[in-house]
Image 1 (spheres, helix red, strand yellow):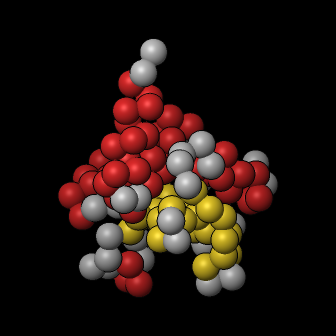
Image 2 (cartoon, helix red, strand yellow):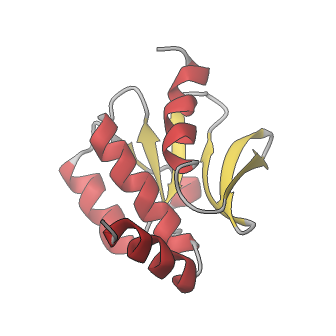
Image 3 (tube, rainbow, N blue to C red):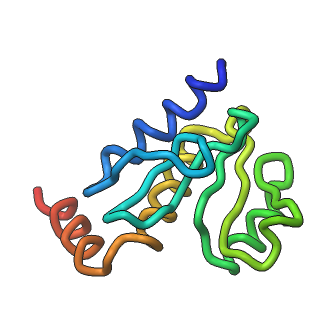
Length: 119
């Protein structure tokens, strides 16, 4: 899969979530919710920077080192790097939504959950 196609997977998932906006960060495609950054593609076009919490970061790094990693630049920050060519569709969807939930205002997340629970 080509580098643009890899990020297209992320974009498709993210744009299904409320109030996600596309933009650029450090010259690469990025995603925000209400102006707050939660994801971007790295300059290599194959690695996703994704907001997370430290507990999840630790778990993913230990459980799935073939998919998730961090560089010295990201140590001590609540972000994780994702090898897009190695991550499955369901896992990617789960982590992108988690990043959105960590970034979006609580009321927006609550409204999203309420809308999803309606028959």
